[in-house]
Image (tube, rainbow, N blue to C red; front, side, top):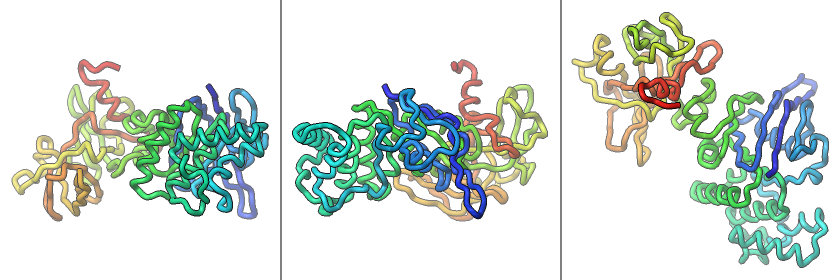
Amino acid sequence: MVELTLTDVTKRYDDTQGTEVAVDDLSLTVEDELVVLLGPSGCGKTTTLRMIAGLETVTDGRISIDGRDVTDLHPSDRSIAMVFQDYGLYTTMSVRENMAYGLKHSTSLSASERRDRVEEMATMFGIEDLLARDVSDLSGGQKQRVALGRAMVREPDVFLLDEPLASLDAKLRSEMRTELQQLQSRLDITTVYVTHDQKEAMTMADRVVVLDGGRLQQVGPPEEVYASPTNRFVADFLGNPPMNQLPAVVVDGGPSAQGLRYAGDAAVSLGTVPASTRGVTPGDEVIAGMRPESLSLTASGPETAGAAETETTGFPGTVTVTEYQGNDNFVHFAVGDEALTAVVGPDVEFSPGERVSVHVAPEDLYLFDPATGDALSTGADARERRPGASR
């Protein structure tokens, strides 16, 4: 068991233009799991990885591996291995020489021991037949396997991967995602993986760490972060298409519920939330969030398009375009000035300009504070409040 700990880690860059905070007071613990650092470009994820590796200095804070402070240690003294997006292989060497290079220069293993370990790792990655080949003769997928094997052959305490699949085509990316998960599970090694691709994060991670602007937004298992985002940024970043978000006003819905009215048209009812929803009372302005896959659409003729009927028929929308996705259709539609998206089955078709009624269950409504962006209520909260639900 190897524990990697970041304590109040900050990275600042000072130049003639001023000070830029790339990572701001980040604390995180990773132990024998695959943790994915996820966020948009410039959020600080690669800088964080490079500080763990020792390739960037830490301005403030502490990094430790199994209780040993490595904050100021040289990369070679940290027992880490790192794989880069561009592979970083020595093109003048063979596959065998690439994989053995680190062992030769950083261990006391004999030549025969190095050979045995390289061949064992090559077999694990399915590249044993490539050991005599020049790296320049390999495909992208083969080069990626060599890079992974070269890193793992050293048996590091911590394994770092910086967008290692970004250069591969879609099919090979999918295959390599599966292989990496199997590898991490088999070796049970503490692994930190950086990506901006939420699909990689959601399918691979034991836990996802969402960063924005250098600050930690949320950390947890993928299903938890997706179901219960802590703020609007996380809700929007996780999901394809992203969560629909539109301004709403809370209204009195009776003793057991509170209603939501679209802020752009008070006659349009968006649905209801339980009366016990914390932090909201009638008259409050909120942001209503709805996952595209949680919306259902039905054709709405002139007889059901009126605002007075929206309580029972759903709220009205006008289709703008439909995108065929194979297994799904993405239906884009407008509600007032807001653009929303629903994910429906491939057999559900609507035409541009067609009016629809949009339905969403109370447990699929999310509420956010419009000023802070913090979550007030999530779908998970609503499901817990249903009669008979257990925590």
